[in-house]
Length: 267
Image (cartoon, rainbow, N blue to C red; front, side, top):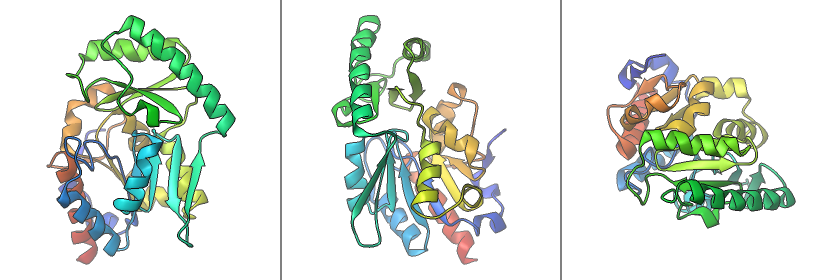
């Protein structure tokens, strides 16, 4: 399916949107930073009554700043390994892909695999945030090192899968996990179990915005899907592309989406 310009999204459909699911790196953030403009757009979305859920590949221990300081309604981390939200009484709540004992076993298996990765690809090391993770292990492919060639990235992904692990990639990390969780599976679970939104309703009333291959499950599942403009760099890495694409890149693309939704809701 070819992507259409965001401006071509039918106004009637936009007015039905009740929430935004957003990736963080290179979608809500810009070059690793949160901008005033993106945070202001997030606040405008809240004022307009839109639910705002972060769906990121970043580690579980990143969720609290996003939840408390950025004021998201919920945060899904590690591509679906965990989710955090604040309940009606102001208490922090959490759900994980597996119990603590299982997660501990998985962590050891991933740490063992890190040694195998180092033997095959000495330049592909665990990401700087690896110690803050509970469900997957991220390898740095472009965050603190020059971006590795696509040919090598394909070899890295193949190695992960050859060792019986699940693999996905973002614009900066290659992720390995023992369990097949995903951004989409945890989003569906969170919306239904926590917010009472059925999957059918979510497909009609929630928009997802992202930028890379680890967003593919979301692009495939949610008809109302948008890519920030920098997604064009990664389209050859996955097949499930968003329905619409912004003119702007990174956090400016997120701002563009929010402004577009609010303009339409106010018409």
